[in-house]
Structures are given as C-alpha cells and as structure tokens.
Length: 510
Image 1: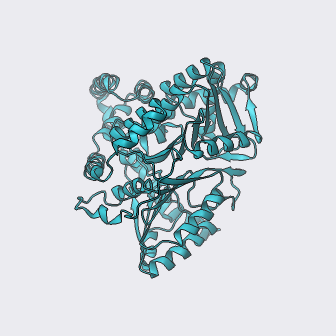
Image 2 (image 1 turned 90 degrees about the vertical axis):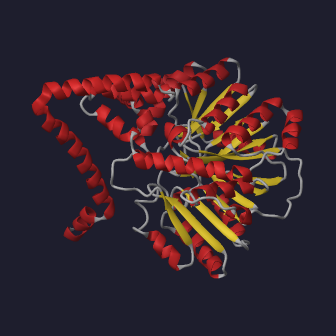
Image 3 (image 1 turned 120 degrees about the vertical axis):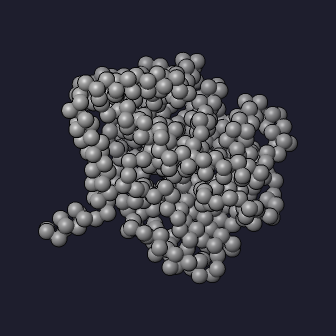
C-alpha cells in the first residue's frame, strides 16, 4: 500500500496537477499579500475589471463566452481580471496561432477549387452550392466529385476497415488522434505499423498532448521512434497556466498513400470498439473516403505536422497522382476547423444545415452545450414544421456535461424539438443528416470546446448514398432509445435542476 501511495504521489500526472495548483495558489497569495494595501489594490483591480468588462462586451466573441467572464468578474473581482489578462497576453499562444495561420496560407495553393464542380452542384441544389462555396473560400477546402466513400455505424467496423487499408500501404501512413490508449486496439495497430515501417514505408503518428497525456508513458514517442515510426505530440501538456492548453487537437485522421482517408468519432482505445465496457454499449460512427477527397485530409495532417516549419513545396510529393474514376454519387467536401481565427466553420456548417432544412434534421452528438444561435436555429426549424431530432447518450461519460445538456432539454422541447437518449449506453458519433440531400460525419461535437476551442475535422456529403446511410443509422438507433418528454423534465429532482442551471452559467469555460 505504501509503494502504491508513493507511485501515485510521484507520478508525472500528479506532479503536473500539483504544479498547476501551486501556480494558482501563488496568484491568490500574491493578491492576499497586496491586501495590506487593500484600498489601493481594490480600487486598481476594480478599474481593471471595469475596463476589461467594456473590452469583453465589445469583442466579436460569442455572447455565450462573454457572459461567464463578466459573471466571474462580479463574483471574484480580485482574481478574474488578472486571469483574463494572463490568458489574452500569453505570448506562446500568440506564436502558436501565428504559426498555424502561416501554414494555412502556405498550403492554400495545394487545395484549389474546380469551378466546374461548383457549377455541377448548382444544377443539383443552389443551397448546397452556396455552402460548398463558403467552405472553399473561408474553410479552405474544396468539394470533390471523383471519390468513393463508406460509412461505418460502429467503431469495430471502422477499425476492421482501417487495418485492411493500412496493410495495403505502399508509400506512407499518417495517423492523427486525440486519444491513443493501451489495449487490444492499439496493440493490433502497432504490430501492423511496425511491419510497415520495417518495409521502409513512411509511418507517422501524432497524438494530442492532453488527450493521451494520462494514458501513455512519458515520452512514449521515443519508444515508437525505435520501431522506425516518426511520432510527434501536439501541444504537449505543460504544468504552466497558459491559454494554449485549451486548444487541443481533437481530430481523428488516418491517411494511406494519399488516396484513402478515415475520420469520425473513433479514437484508438478499446472502449471505442466495444472491447472494453466503460459506459455501456459505445455507439460511434465514422467514414472512409477514397480518391481525390483523401488529399484534403493529407494536407490537414501535414499542416499540423510541419506547424513550425516553412513550406518549400514538400507537400506535393505526398499527392496521389493516379486519377480516381469519376462517379455520380453526389459530392464530398472534407474540412477542418481551428481555434486560431474567428471563422467558426464547424458551427456555421451545422447552422446552415439546420436553417435550410425543409423536411428533417437528425443529429447524433455525445454532448450538448449550445450557444444562442444554435438554440434559436433548432427551435425555429422545429416551429416551421421540420422534424428536428437529437440523439444523446443515456449513460454519460462526464456527469457534469450530461447535467448541462439537461438544462437545454426543456427549452428545446418547448420549441418542439424531439430529444432521445440511447438506452444501451454512450453515443459518441457526431452526425448530421437532413432532407436526404446533405450529411456530416466527423469529430465535431455540439459543445463549446469543439465549436470554438479545438482543432476539428469532418466531411460534408451532398446527394450521396452516405447521406441515406447516416439517416438509416439514426432511424435504426432510435429503436434502442427512450424519448425525453416535458414531463421527464418536470419530474427531475429540484437539486439536479439547480446543479444543471449553475453549471450552464460556466459551460463555455469548461
């Protein structure tokens, strides 16, 4: 027991948490020390908070993000202003944003939009064409016609396809995941990757410094390098108070030889393929794109991989040169969203689908932390007679986020939005489908972190069989759901409702 206690106290995760706590304590003690000059310090901080309140109110940031800061300034006037200044003046974060913006500009030349494809889309639907134009011009990713795609309604199905495609690799294999955890899934993948690396194939792995921080041994990337696998940790978790720690790489990308790519909700951990039970049955979803569309995912990966380097034309050598046969199965548009600019691409795609729906909008999401625009859009669509349905987990992975989701339930139900919970367990898929004409599958949750703070990716399908596949998956999953009613909301214990309301106040900062 003593040895176990020592291991817990002195492992790296505990030490990181202690260092963060020490820094926060230092800030508090500094203000308390200055309280010997209470009147002067309080007056100075009051002026600071007032100026910051005016500044925050006039920024272009989402009102849902502004309100918690303003509320905290009222409740904790001695500390909140200083904390806000620390976040906004973080030099490391500014450099991080500058580097990514530079890489996006440098790589834009690799992602031209073919005008004839937009004209073909116009013939099908001007609504779809306008969204595709927006994504091409402001998201930076073109729409494609020459592709093949497959939708996987479960993680185990996607994992099987991933292994098959990786074994066919001849040039390179790029993996980018938020979470990589020890277990059967990772071990099977690792054995294949080691064999491929030994054959001289360029194998690269990038994982998030926070998502994987507490799951793998420290400096695990060095072990992978011994197998001939290149590895990088994105935005490594550091025991320092810095705003860049908020910006995680939540994307899930696998690219093989530039012609095949996977994305979706599935991370590399056994619960995602139901080999380990954590929150009941794990309902996930993902896609495989083959052909020209895979190139966009290749560029996404290399943008972050070469984040601090200057482009010298190296991306071109990763392009798959063999032309993919043309098909008439609609269009696909992979895209990425980043927290480094004020263009909230992921949120805007969701809003566009909801606002233009005529018949139905079906949504699968593990989390529900909505801003005013999304609440208004969902409610208005339902009032117009659109069949708006949300599918959420019945067994949550984070009790506090689940509690926040319930704070929106009655508000949405009052607007005639229908809400379901997946009884067997946890929904982790991030899927939209609407009107048999458009669907999205990817990594973007309907919460503030995904929509505003994380690096994310997804693919939009227009008039493709994938749209119908995602719709069918939703309808089939409804058979295992319970519908939430207004009566369920009214019967909810008063204490839980109070907790939900309180947590919702600070949801954008969580």
